[in-house]
Image (cartoon, rainbow, N blue to C red; front, side, top):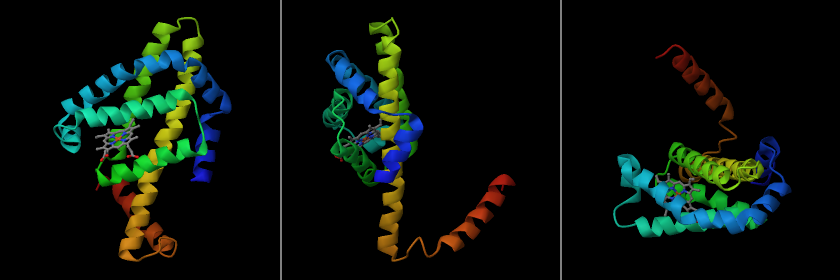
Length: 187
Ligand code: HEM
């Protein structure tokens, strides 16, 4: 996970300044937690495929998880354990069949919500800075969750099926070339 984290931070432009900025703005951004949790689950419960994943009667629990996640992010207390917690979300999502498109779509919602609140609260340019810090942080998180999902999914398959991906890499390349041709020909 270490190299992945470096890649995501380096390419998004994430830096320690972002954590610092989030820490400084936390007294304000923390107050948005209930509104975000409400909007987040209104969306997921209004959409049948995600409603089915979440299940009836679990809304309070799910909202609590998201609230804790959001407060953790905006606290700006960024430690190696912080990033590790994000990586683990991918594993939990595999079990609950929360595919990455759902996660990415909702991350986009959370970011757009946060941008609106920032511009409303700090109309003077600071809002854009705070949003930038949140955006880079949550983009790195989305990368960790998505890659955590993908790598652990493949790893679990390797363990269950007893194959080594590294050994069958060339055969996979051949197969992927075939799939690429099919996709390009519209088959
Ligand atoms: C911004 C996107 C998302 C974030 C940041 C996020 C975050 C989390 C976190 C922090 C957990 C708890 C992980 C743990 O137990 O260590 C979790 C679990 C879970 N998430 Fe997500 N999630 C996101 C999107 C979604 C979406 C779109 C759905 C539904 C379609 C979903 C459904 C679930 C479910 C069902 C669990 C498992 C709860 C359990 O069994 O305890 N999540 N998520």
